[in-house]
Amino acid sequence: MKTEEFQEKYGIIGNSKRIKDLVDIIQQIARSDISILITGESGVGKEVFARTIHGASNRSKQKLVNLNCGAIPEGLIESELFGHEKGSFTGASDVRKGYFEIADKGTLFLDEIGELPYTTQVKLLRVLETKEFMRIGSERVTSVDVRIIAATNKSLEHEVVTKQFRNDLFFRLKAVTLTIPPLREREEDILPFANHFIENYCERNNLPEFEFDKNVPDLLVSYQWPGNVRELKNTIESALALNRDGKITANSFDLLLSPPAAFTENRNLPIHLNKPSDALDREMIYRALIEIKKDVDDLKDMARLNLNNVQNSDFQFDEVIPINELEKRAIENALIQTKWNKKTTAKLLNISERTLYRKLKEYEIN
Image 1 (tube, rainbow, N blue to C red):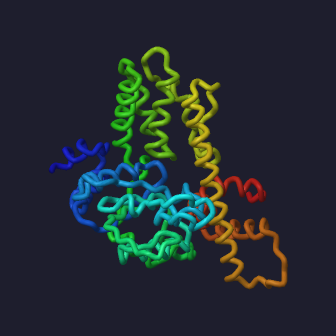
Image 2: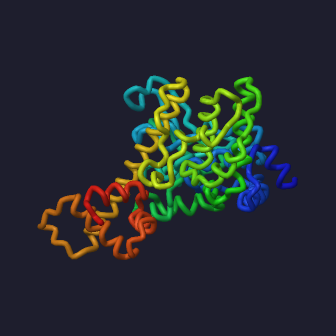
Image 3: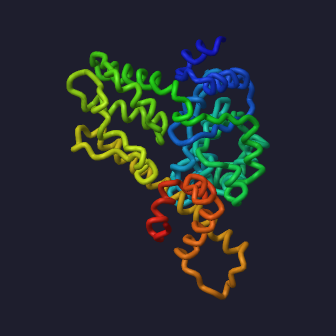
């Protein structure tokens, strides 16, 4: 099947060479049962590619089961994956199948695999290697035939180095790795996405087609889209929801797009728009929660890095050093190494630029 036909069949939007190359790879590997790891920033559409792989596979008539590993509390994740027997723990009032059993003969998509607890990773690896597991509280082995597609917006290589992710599981998952590029690196895909979202919105809401003012395409293409395709979709739909004359102009995005200088500080959280609709309110809350989670993850990574710095340094462990002093030293050392390149410093510290700028201000590092 030609690349364009395949994209149209499975709903993959993109004219860029990098997307077309990914589509070509998917067509080659979809019919095998090899494990696939999909990487890329949040919002690039990793789930779309997972659905495409399943849809083009020999398992397409069976279930595709999605599990977000970051959305389930650590104490419940094993029960969700492997199921449990009645009475196996407090609250287990019935026998319950896990996601592996539900996905038997089909595909299991493990999103945010980097959030999987370390202890659970051991059991997951065993299931991948033996295709067998036991429900919690059971003594009976259950066999399954499941294809695994995993996705993450983290660097699993870094997680392996920092002992947050098992290297044997990492190599087991990454038999084939697909890296989805961020939207800012494929500008030619921005307008096709925007047009697609407008068409869908108008169709769902039974509205006439909206038109772009001549200045809008340049505005959309020049914006960096830190939230990638997800942010573009939300922005387009918000602009349409607030529109009254059926024409989208540059002014339609005044309150929806942050200026470049605000990217690192605000990460493009939307400004409250006087509650135009319940749907928009829910969307704003959802996006805010995502940003809070990202900040917590950044601070966790930074704390682990600071601990490693202490362990590898000449500090005397009978000396009590405040955490904020350790953070300040780590940032100053990284700035010196990178010659005060903020972007490179943030990468070196494994934190976002937003977090770095906040810390620079907090510690008065100039």
